[in-house]
Image (cartoon, rainbow, N blue to C red):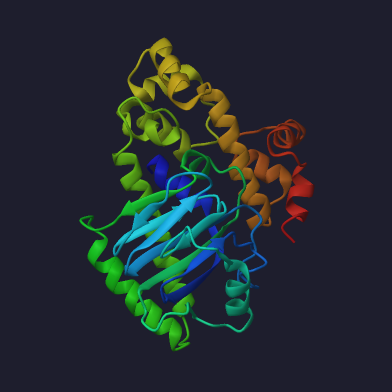
Length: 318
């Protein structure tokens, strides 16, 4: 299993709200949607990621004090941490709050939002809000606050647009299963956006995503992710990477910002956190699954890394 697939498996989107949106220029929204705005279908114990996939028209988006960016058909605006942002035909206009619109749609089980004072629909896109089951996930940490990905020209482009149009029509007609279709499509588009971002990283980039482009580090990460309970050492991981121990340790540390064994410990705790919330295994069984022979040693390590004892973490998912 490659490391990116494994991180995506553990990231796990725990629910979401998906809306077809039609906007009539001029319009501007301030978007900072909370899980509470999204209704009962979104129960986030981690983070909320937001995206806007453009079907027709052209919209502006601005994050904080950054310069506005523009996105058109076939482009995906991804906000990995759901940071507040302005979205509109013109982001210099006085904005309305998006939360009440989304909340009203969620409360009334609407599939779409039609907004704006103009007579003609200018901008047509799908908005999604994906709840993650885990905080501090390495993949979300590695992504920039806002990513505009052009999916046109990528292998997914044709099916993505046709599938979203189909799913939006299904959702608008309230046929059973339409939310599930949109959820699966959203996860696939998330993966495509991440892949595109990795491919365009500068040569000297650092971080987890940059490590995936390094064949040696990618091999070590894949081995570590495939067998998290294995008693890995820096030497054994260096062997997987086909590097000397010193060369591997230096490359791993300079790229990921931590020693390989520290990364292993962090990954084990993330896996344990998922198991505590999604399985009925005992704490002792989970400790063994992630490579700890002693439940007490595991509990201390988990508390240090995650900020809660294993039992309290499990109760927090109820």
